[in-house]
Each structure stands twice: as structure tokens, then as C-alpha cells.
Amino acid sequence: MTKLLIKIFIKEYQKTDDLLVRSAYGKLAGWVGIICNLLLFLGKCLIGAAAGSVAVVADAINSLSDASANVISLLGFKMASKPADKDHPYGHARYEYLAGLFVALLVMAIGLELLKTGIQRVLEPVTVDFTLVTVGILLGSILVKLWLAVFYRSVGKRISSQTLLAAAVDSRNDVISTAAVLIAGILAYKTGWMLDGWLGIEVALFILYSGFGLVKETLDSLLGKAPDPELVKRIHDKVLSYEGVLGTHDLMIHDYGPGRLFASVHVEMAAEADVIRCHAIIDRIEEDFLEQDGLNMLIHFDPIITDSAVEDIRSWLNRLVKSIDERISIHDLRQIIKENGSRLIFDCVVPYDYPVSDTDLKERIQELVSEEHSDSQCLITIDRSYAPLPHSREQES
Image 1 (cartoon, rainbow, N blue to C red):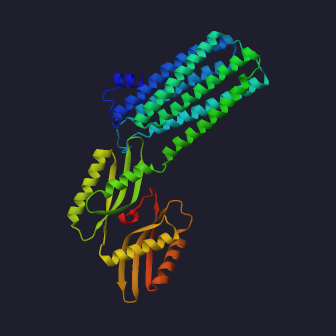
Image 2: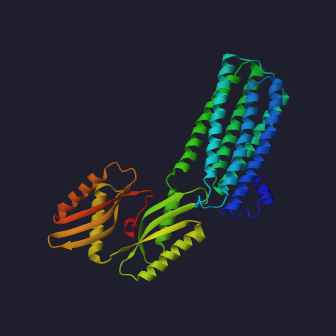
Image 3: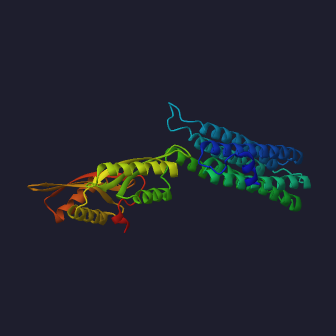
């Protein structure tokens, strides 16, 4: 059913990286959700009012709020598809993250309201008029919501949409809450046990828990979470695959919304090589990333001296800093020979959350260097690694 809807309503549905196609996916998901949830709201509201079940009526209101969430998602995709302009040169794709946050907050609001209703029903139990019609409506609701959860998840994975994945979780929660209502009604009818309120409380707590997770996940995207390790490795391996590239470091990836990734990286090439040729290779790397991966890449060229003496010093320094912590590495090494000794100038890469202060780390490295070469002075720049990866072929071996 999902594939059929996609083929009917989305032209060129295979091009999920295209912003217009992505927007079409979002609009389709939004309209499907609005129609399904409005029909569920009407059916459950009528049956709940007739049966006098607060759980069924609450479930009906939940369906109406889901339709509202679908409207928000629809608007989010529409605004995210707007092209870049003078005031927003990176585009408007983060509107999709905002839509996902609204959906997540709505999930939590529903959980709080259901918790309140459940507590009231525990304190003041009411007999529920449970009929076969009620059972039929609730079973139909479970089936529809189960299909919607699968539909949202399938479309969300196709276009890597946090908003639709949040909607999938919300629909899954609805399946659980409606099933709880059904179980409570059947038990009340068969045994006289008034579990309507207790099951409502349990479902509400589950919804609040999942809603908190959704809020955290969408906030992470808005605040700037760490890049996907698989993406980092793929970029790293691709850069090193080009002729003349000896190493790479200082990778930074900026997420301006789905389909709007920008990155910068330093690429090490031999200082003795032809500069024009190196520049041409770097241009080709940038063009390939844009054409093949849709990634706007900016590359900084780092010339490194490759003679054996400097390579020996570089290897020695790398071993030395790794004796402090395996996650530390160095790059951009230069050596200046003076009459009274030498000066070693290099950058030292540490994890972004490294607990030792920059000053203390510099002093520790200088101590270790002085133990073997008392006449060597270190001028160290500490780099925080935002996308940790090995920076040279030697470290990978």
C-alpha cells in the first residue's frame, strides 16, 4: 500500500535527495495522516460518548491531536522546501526539525493529559458500557494506527526524516494506548474490574517516556549533534582514496537540515609536490563530494615535508602523545633548527570532551619531549576533534 501511494502521488520518487521530491514525500505523509486521524476521531468520539468511556473519548482526542500534528508536519515540509534566500543562504531545511520538535512536544502533552484523566478515573471509577460496536471501532483503530506507524517509518527512512520517524513512534504509542483501552473494557465487561484508569496511567507514563526521547532527539539535531560515525568514516576513506593525499584531519560537518550538509577538512599532501597539481586534485575532491554525495565540501591544503628525518620525528611524537592517551594525535609538524637546539611546531588533536586542560597537556608533552631531547622546545596548538577519525595512513596501519 505504501509503495502504491508513493508511485501514484510522487513523481520521480526515486530521487529522495531532491528537495522537491522530499517535500512531496512529506506532503503525502501529512495528508494521509490527517485523513486517517480525522476518521478515527469521529468514530471513537461517537462510540466513547455513547459508551461513557473516558478512555475511549481520550483516545478520540488523541486522534484529533494526531491530525493537528500532521498539519504541523505538512507545514514543516512546505517551509523546509523553500529555496535559500539573502537572509538564509543555507536554506530553510531546519524547519523540518522544528516540526519534529512540535510533534514530540505534542506527544508529551497528550501523555500528561492522559495521566491526569487516568488518575481521576482511578479515584472516581465509572462503569463503562462496553459493546461489540466499541470493540469493532477500537480494533479498527488499532489496525489503522499500526498501518500508519509502518507507513510513517517507511517514508521517514526513505527521506531520513526525523519528523516522520517521530510520527511513527506516536502512531505506535496510539496502538498501545488503544489496545490498553480495549483490554480494560473487556476485563470490565467479563469480571467487573475497573481497570480503565490504571491502564490509562500506565499508557500515559509510556507515552511520556517515549515523548521525552523524541524531544531529546529533535533538540539534538537543532543544537548540532555529533555527525554519524559512518558518514565520518566514509568521508575519511574517500578523501584518502585520491592520488597524492597523505592524510586528513580537522573534519567539521555542519547540519543545516535534511539534505543541507556542509563540511570542511584539512588534506595533507607532500610539500615537494607541484602546487598546481595538488590544487587540481583538491578541486576534484570537492566537486566529487558535491556531485556524488550532495555534500558541500571545503578543503584546506596542508603541505607536509616527507623526508625521512621529519617522518621519524613525526612518528616519534605520535608515539609519545599516545603514551598519554591513545586518542591523541599530531599533525602540521614543522621543525626549526637553531644553534642552541630545535623548535618543534605542531597541532595536537584531542577529543572534544578531553578532561585535561590545554595548558596541562602542553606541559606534559614538553616534559616527555625534554626527557629524550632536552634542547627541543615545543610550540603546540591544541585542536578539539569534532568528528574523530584517524588523520594519517600510518595511524590506520
